[in-house]
Image 1 (cartoon, one colour):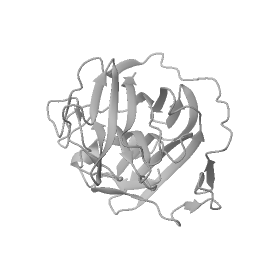
Image 2 (cartoon, helix red, strand yellow):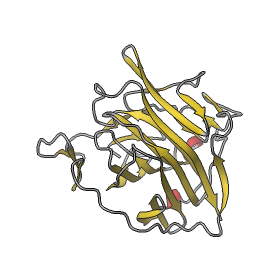
Image 3 (cartoon, helix red, strand yellow):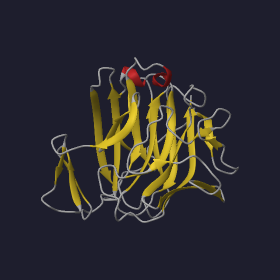
Image 4 (spheres, one colour):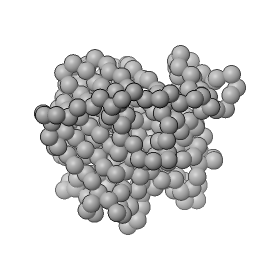
Amino acid sequence: MLGIYDPKHGGDRQPLKVGDGVAAAENDPTAYRIGVLKVDAKAPVPKLAAATLNLKGYHLTFDEDFKEPLSVSAWGPGTRWIAHTPYAGDFGDARFADPQEGFPFTVENGILRIEARKDGERWRAGLLSSMDPKGNGFAQKYGYFEMRAKLPKGLGTWPAFWLLAAPSILDKSVTGMEIDVLEQYGVNPNALCTNVHLWYPDKRHKADGRAYLVAGMTDDFHRYGVMVDSDFITFYYDGVELRRVRTPEEAKVPLYLLVNLALGGGWPVDKTPNPSYMYVDYVRAWSK
């Protein structure tokens, strides 16, 4: 949301500058502005409405519950996940590491732990993608996508759960499409950020982002979901609808899953806890 990149052309995700819709908030280190939205770490967290998510008539199409050893490789093929974006683009202040024994992924008692660690002067962290650079893997047109996770504590952490349009893996001439189901920045642990991005071949970029104050994302496990159909993209938190936007044509294609613990996103990492951890209970998708 605040750190953007072009998923078709790769490269590092770059923080937005003042003038790109981000401004300092009256010299208050606990607050920041995104366009006209001010998110304050000291602000009271509003009470959520009742849950409205209804999956009647839907069936599971993807179920990663981490009950078995994680099926992951650096680039595939032959594994459920790869440990990099299919377009080979890192972002933030940590490089995404190839999987090795005990790092950056550990599975224990049905929970995935993603670790960010600083070795010497360099940070490394973890990302999972359900599709590889040749377009192999899981992607789905329409349906409901959800992750249940406990987010890391500490300045500089930047966990995310997001979807990308599968056609742009192999065809760089099409408009890239990204749905950020969850982005959270350690500078404000109560801000749940959502976004819909369009990345055009001529390098234009459009985004529709919004943040919500919710409590406890770093204290316990919560569900982060999005329903995509031909009419709307609808964001959910613990089954509560947060907002909906009209589905652009670019989202009416198969979408694949990404989960990551990145660092930075426009904020410094000099005070980021080393190591930092993100915990994931499951990643699932449903379809009619």
